[in-house]
Length: 465
Image (cartoon, rainbow, N blue to C red; front, side, top):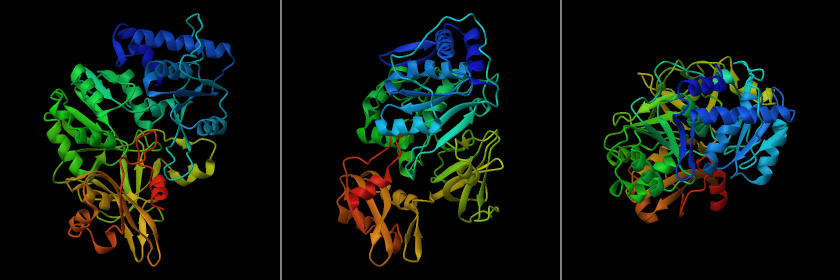
């Protein structure tokens, strides 16, 4: 199965049905999507683009319709799409395009079209490369993660389409992220019409949900936190939402509980994966008995906790999280050494530390690179953040390491909210061990984030220095 093949099938079955809407900008039916992407594919072939060539796609969140056409046009031509957000710095875009050897770049308002004779344009095979997606680079240099058609289309094309309980699926994920690409595949394969908006604000997104009576909603934790802080549930009817999914980062337990109250009819779920591991993932339906778990593997994938030598560790033992893909794995483009380090015979090293309980539920301890080695102790920033979030005056928090003259490193916490620092220190004394208590607290108007919504801890360290 390939994504262009899925689109052709959907367009043949439902040509006039709306696949995607960008609120205030327009909509795209399956028939239009197929016709326009085929025109882009013909034009690219006319320009000399051939099978396996890389084509950069630099688009913004208000350009989801043109971006979707461009993405499928590139794949229909047999080329490899390289999605990039227009919010990236120009130098970063240039570096990524140079790294993958892109032979062409498409931007909003520049989509080429040409008439074709209905030919298949040498359709790509499932094992052909289809996409190179660059990681966020929050822990180092961004890497290009290459995925095949078979990887991207895994699980698609079944008789029962995903999210059949909904007529509309609402999200605000950015272009150029793994979560955004997941929504793009949903627009082709899932039952509901996918709706989004050019720019996320808590009020606008809540109004979008209310306007379309969305039954399924996807957010990143930062968006959920902003919506709760803005009290959107008091001004908008959110009762239509039956499934609220959070992705891209762990969802703090207190935030998950507050979402349950704000979305009274919704099942709250947390999805855990990575750009490298997809489509492998764990899914956790919010359970007060397991508030910090990110769930168990689904759809044929698997999780294990590995020791330094790669051997499996028993339940309750902290080690490195490995996920097994249910289909062909991804790889780092042009980096065989890094691929060999991370991708191991169908398993993917996640770069996270965690443990499994006796029932197979996964708990994250920290990003391996974020663990704070303070004196003789290793401190989990996730654990510290969970504790800080329990204070009612805290809207959002991020823990990180800062230099310390005797311990090497110690804990610092950046807080968004109105809580006085001394009050928070007293509050945390009963929740954290002495070596986990922050030696420094800073209050910010907002946490620095990359274009995918993840907290940029390198920037926090610079602020704290």
